[in-house]
Length: 188
Image 1: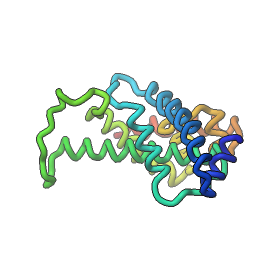
Image 2 (image 1 turned 90 degrees about the vertical axis):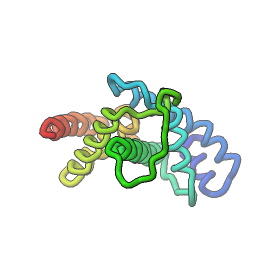
Image 3 (image 1 turned 180 degrees about the horizontal axis):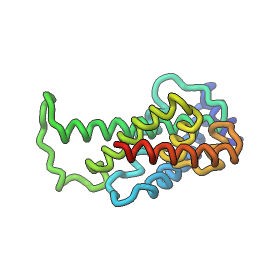
Image 4 (image 1 turned 135 degrees about the vertical axis):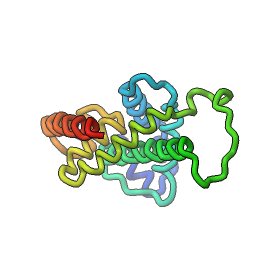
């Protein structure tokens, strides 16, 4: 069975298929997260395993969705990873700025480096997220391409499959989207 058939069988309640999906998809998610992590410069504090585990839990919680294909699954996984990174970045920003929240002492020196998200990276993720939201207002397809490639760590071919768009369109949207984001982020 290919991954699409396994996803559909798992959605229909086949527990064995669900276990096979986990084994197959987990590695793909890990590779996508690792590729995405390699694009971050100067910050090695975010653990890709933790990101993938959280994404998998989000994808698997609640009612079983009806995945149309491997590509559909990867597109949704990219969106989930984006949201997880944005949520962590917001938490980091809130921690940095204080607030009315109950404060619990936390010794960052005793925490594993893999569990921390630097303040600079958190701000960068939030700026990209906010700019992507603005891009999606005028060019939603470009925003989805950026989301899959940047937050999901997908390659051009995987993004093409995930969004059901030709490779040449993905490449064009990727280039145009990057230029637009660069201009937007430079303003900030």
